Image (cartoon, rainbow, N blue to C red; front, side, top):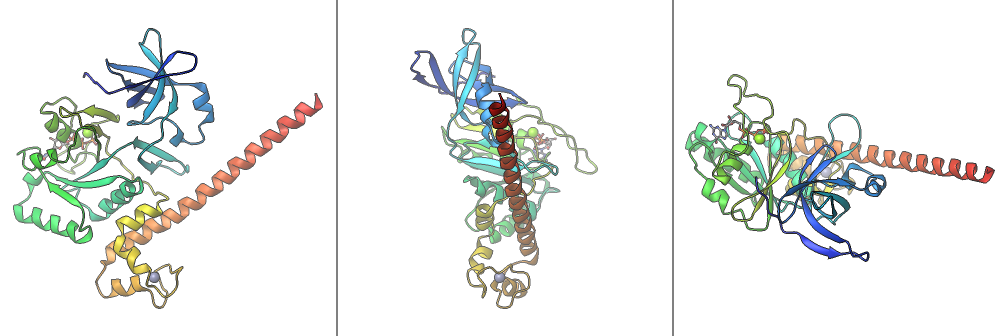
Length: 349
Ligand SMILES: Nc1nc2c(ncn2[C@@H]2O[C@H](COP(=O)(O)OP(=O)(O)OP(=O)(O)O)[C@@H](O)[C@H]2O)c(=O)[nH]1
Ligand SMILES: [Mg+2]
Ligand SMILES: [Zn+2]
């Protein structure tokens, strides 16, 4: 597919031309960048690799990077990652404490759940935390509206609206085309969007609908259990006709726990607000006397399930933050140790 992305020129002191371009795909350690003319492969410099302290320091889809063209402009070397406006990250699956950068410089995230089997408020809350934490605007898209009655669709919209009153939501169907026009109105030229949601909810099908062309592979969900393998395997930035950019992502199996206090506060705004009136300012909202959150739950002003999800994510967040700090401390100690050994060696010589 032809990809035209604006690139800006910059001249370095040596006089060789460097450009600021956008990363449009990442394939393991290979990057694909979009220049004015075409997509080309790029690698990062050794300096960038060695100075990276965490996976977050590597380029991701959506990043603006400073590159130098080599081999008559058929390849590029990435020297630097420009400062990011927003970041979408999650904890990597497994026990290792690390973040994975899903995408950078996203303006709006479309969180997609299908109205049938995938619909789950607790998972939605998780996505909201992730998106809010990245400083990104969320829009919720509920797919497969063709599989439910209009009444059931309305009920689900009301249910989400009761938790997130300010949230933009659209129910749509790739099959009938209902709601697609409304989604189009969110796509502003020059802005960057991403599609998030479980495997099989219809992210790629939506992208194809927006492109008015079946460009990308989708997969039929296994009839019986609603499960199938991932159809999309890599993240990629696509330019729509109106110059809006959109990143399709593979469905995430596990969202992972995140050290995200700011995201939690926004996604659970009413609980955060209540907690300011708890008797103890370090209230854990689990057993304390005079806890405003507990009384709101007891009185049914906050749903019990939502409260439990909040506690669960808060606990994960604290745990993750602790392990992260510990890891940082260990890394620092290790670095110091290496340095002192090197110094001792040097002195011996
Ligand atoms: N009935 C109905 N089926 C849909 C709709 N949208 C998508 N599907 C079907 O759902 C299946 C999965 O769609 P995909 O677009 O591949 O899902 P995805 O979210 O991209 O999945 P991954 O790439 O695995 O993350 C396909 O068989 C689609 O035809 C819809 O609005 N209604
Ligand atoms: Mg897909
Ligand atoms: Zn409390």
